[in-house]
Length: 128
Image 1 (cartoon, rainbow, N blue to C red):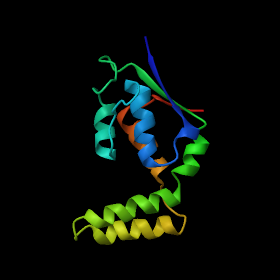
Image 2: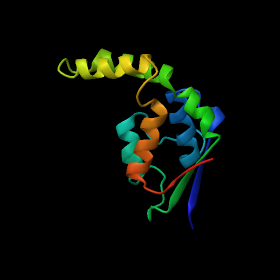
Image 3: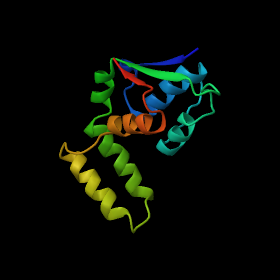
């Protein structure tokens, strides 16, 4: 039987809130399902609550509300954080990505999450 994990889009007001919402959708109140992009990708590949047979879907209701909340402003905030800890050799590329986001261009945090879901769990994302 396919497990369905529901993300209520209006509850996703930031990336931090996304981690809470997806954690609770998969593992119940207070549940964990990654708190960074790499951990999220790992969780989607199995474990931390996904069924052993990999039979699950993620239903992202009112995803447009999440798309707005996880838009370019949130992307700039996240890239500013990354700039504080990135290796100096990577700083120019992260800065360029941050500058594009500040100009309202390029992929957003929402796009990052969708790309991870689609690459790690192909065909399992439903955007409603």
